[in-house]
Figure 1: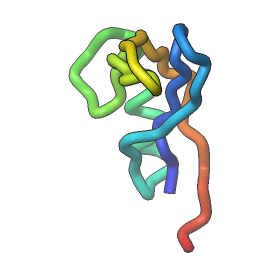
Figure 2 (figure 1 turned 30 degrees about the vertical axis):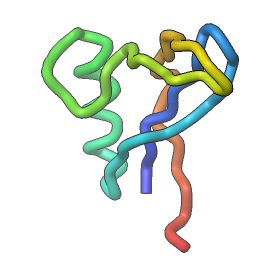
Figure 3 (figure 1 turned 180 degrees about the horizontal axis):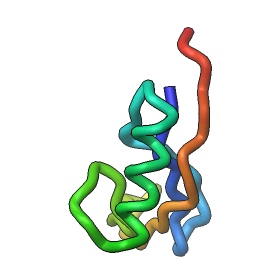
Length: 68
């Protein structure tokens, strides 16, 4: 599975919240995100930082994680 990975500017947490099983689809989604086109991957997302606060998270790539 290729998970779209984000890093929060405020707290520094790295997280994934969506992805695809296709390498080509992941690459296409990242390319479309950089062009600000419609895709599951977005260049920025709102992140709920713990214990409180909200940050802006940037797309840093699509990382492969083997299925468990």
